[in-house]
Image 1 (tube, rainbow, N blue to C red):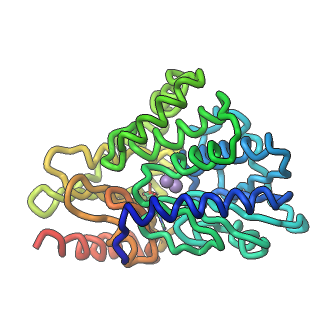
Image 2: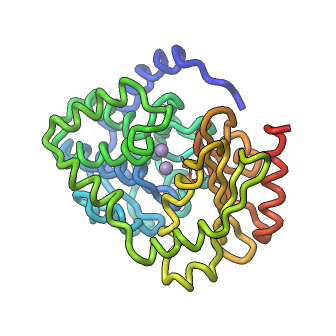
Length: 332
Ligand code: AMP
Ligand code: MN
Ligand code: MN
C-alpha cells in the first residue's frame, strides 16, 4: 500500500474540489448511493450532500443499497433513500465513504453507467476509482470532506445538513475519541453546533437507545471473549444461533467491538460475525501500534489504521485461526 503525504493531499484536494464543483454544476441527474452495511458516516454524508444539492435545484437520487440501521432512522429526510430505478439517466454518480466499487453493492452498476464518477472518501485503502477523486486519509470522516465541499459550492449549511454531518463525524471518530480527530474536526463540529443542532437528541438516539435485545446480544457475545498473545489481542464471536437466541439482528452488534478494544492492555480487538455459515465478516480495532487496515487489505477488505474490516469465506473457527496468524506477525 502506498504511504500518503498530507501536504500533497491538501494541495491536490483544492484542485479536485474545483473539478468536482464543475461536474456538479454541469449535471442535472445526480445519483448517490450508500455502501453495503451503511454506517453513520456514510448515511450522514449522503443525506447532507443530497439535501445540499437539492437546494441547488438538482435532481438528486440517494440509492439505498442495503438496510438502514435503526439507529439512523431519526435523521432528517431519511426518506430521501430510495430503491434504484434502472431506467433513470445518470449524469453524475457521487460515491461517498467507499474504498472500492464493490462496496457499493448494487450501486456499482449505477456508478459504472454514469457519465462521470466522483469518489469522495477517507479510507487509506481507497482505490481512486473515480473520474475525480477527493481521497484524504487524514480526514476523520467523509463527513468532513462533504462539509468542505458544501461550503465551497456556496450552499448554506442549515440545521438539517449540520445534523447529518455531525452524525457522520461523531460516529466515525468514536465520539471524537480516535486519533483521526484533529483540531479541524473540532472546528467543523463547533461550526455545526452553531447552526442550532440538538446534540443531546443526537447523542440519545445514537448512543443511549440500546434495545434489550441488543443488550442481551452484547452479553452473549462478550461471553465468548478470548484473550491471547499475552493479553494484547482479544477475540469475540457472534453466530447466527446467538442472534436467534437474542431475537436480534446483525446491526445490533454495533459497538461490541469498541467495548472489547477498551479492555486494558488490548492492542488489537477482533469480532467475527457469522453472516452465513461460511461467510464471516471481521471487524478489527487497534489502539496504538498495529495498522489493522493492512491486515484487512490482505483479505480484500480495507479501512483505517485503527478500524478496518473484511469478509472471509470459510467457517468461523478457520477464519479465527487465519486472522490470529496474521495478527501474530505483529507480536512476534
Ligand atoms: P467495520 O469494522 O465494519 O465497522 O468497519 C471499520 C472500517 O473499515 C470502516 O471505515 C469501513 O468502511 C471499513 N471496512 C469494513 N469492511 C470493509 C471492506 N470489506 N472493504 C473495505 N473497507 C471496509
Ligand atoms: Mn463507512
Ligand atoms: Mn467513514
